[in-house]
Length: 221
Image (cartoon, rainbow, N blue to C red):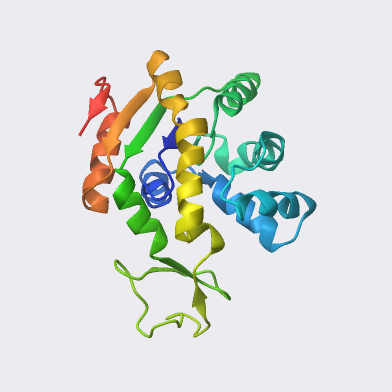
């Protein structure tokens, strides 16, 4: 079972990926997490990736693919995985398809979490992260107990450069031009299932699970 989660930044792919990983007992593989780990550890690939991430641009395919291939080949992903944030363009999708085929695997379902643009900006611009432990907060949905301070370790929380409004707009434009075409790409293969991304986390998870476990509708709400 190899599942792809598609959706604009802020659509909730990360949250749903965690729920699905627990449900199906396969790992969530987030390119965002992989990229940030490389940036945090100042690897050569991470330093190159940071230049693009800070501008709200997509990291070049060769950098992302090099980081991802080893993860897909890990022992815990032999029964499948949930890909969160990859592929992000047609070229990556084709590389992924070839890579999985060489491993005797394929994509089983592609879930697209759909959220309107105004809501995406509201979600993203309110996100905050702890500088020390990486804990995540939101000024509206999950604020810290003390303004500007992490509940877990007491360190400063801050707004990442890629969560500032100017950068958010750039990220959304890049998504619309580079990633959105994947909806048609996977729809033509009969793999795409569109999910309404507004509602409670649990409700959205149930809808996604229903789509994965056998819905043959092209639109699920």
